[in-house]
Length: 127
Image 1 (tube, rainbow, N blue to C red):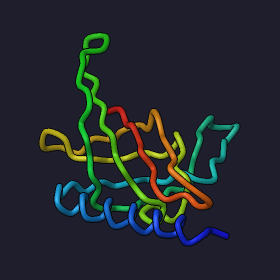
Image 2: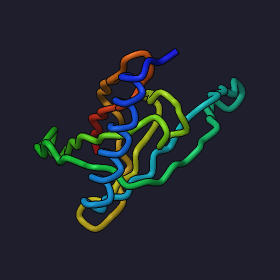
Image 3: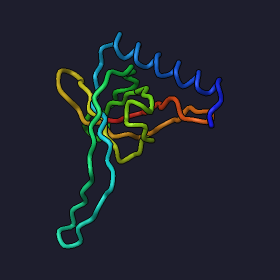
């Protein structure tokens, strides 16, 4: 059972992420990929997808050329309640707007901040 200080950290993180997300006005769609099944006859992997759209603080951290194409990285800050109280996974995707169009980003690194309960995720995505 989480203690009072742990609950305070969770509530503060939730409020800071919400306030920064609204002030920066950057909406993402986080797609949770769950229950993967593999069809052996067709070779297809299917998942049950759940999409969550919300405002988040986004920090664009890098843009470099990689094998003749541009690769960009961004850092996002989200709270568990924004993604259905789930833990992020590397199979999940994030869709964000960059240079006027939507880009689907792959999660390449995640950091979890917690006490007795998780209260903040920092995700590094590549697109």
